[in-house]
Structure formats: structure tokens, C-alpha cells
Image 1 (cartoon, rainbow, N blue to C red):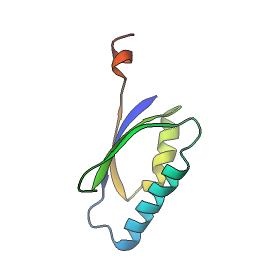
Image 2: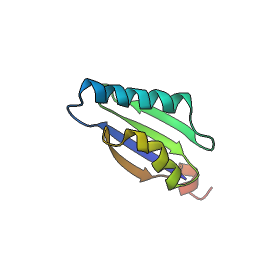
Image 3: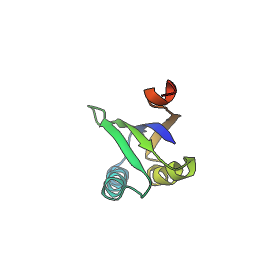
Image 4: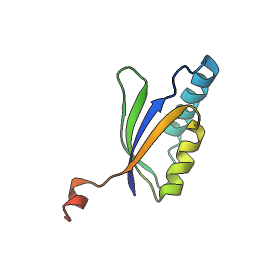
Length: 89
């Protein structure tokens, strides 16, 4: 399953919360779970959020990936297809 994940940093994080957010990001990038492909990842120019496309075995795997970010980011998760999948190729 493939998902577009739009993460937006919660406004007014204090330094400790921001530190937790950056630590969670570093852990994820250093240890992308087996069976998960980070297809693309773009950070907004103002660093307030990101857009990522991940291929994961199932929604539960994505929820586990996102758990360390709870309370630090607002997330919109959208199931997506490649153009080839959408066109039936």
C-alpha cells in the first residue's frame, strides 16, 4: 500500500518538544523499518512540515511509523496510486 503523508508541525512547540520531533525524525531516517520504502520526502521550505510518499505493507505499519510523532505534528494521510496503477498498466 502506498500513502502520501502530509505532516505539519504543531504550532508553538517548545524546545523540548521540537527536540523530540527532530529525534523521532532522525530515528526514522536512520532505521526505516523492513518492508517500508520511503519513495520520496520533501520538507517545506519554511521547515514547518513535509510531504512523503511511503510504501508500507498495511495501514497498521504506517500507524506504527507515525506513533512517535503524535502530538508533535498534524497529519493528513492519503492512499495513492502510481500513474501506472491508476491506468491499469
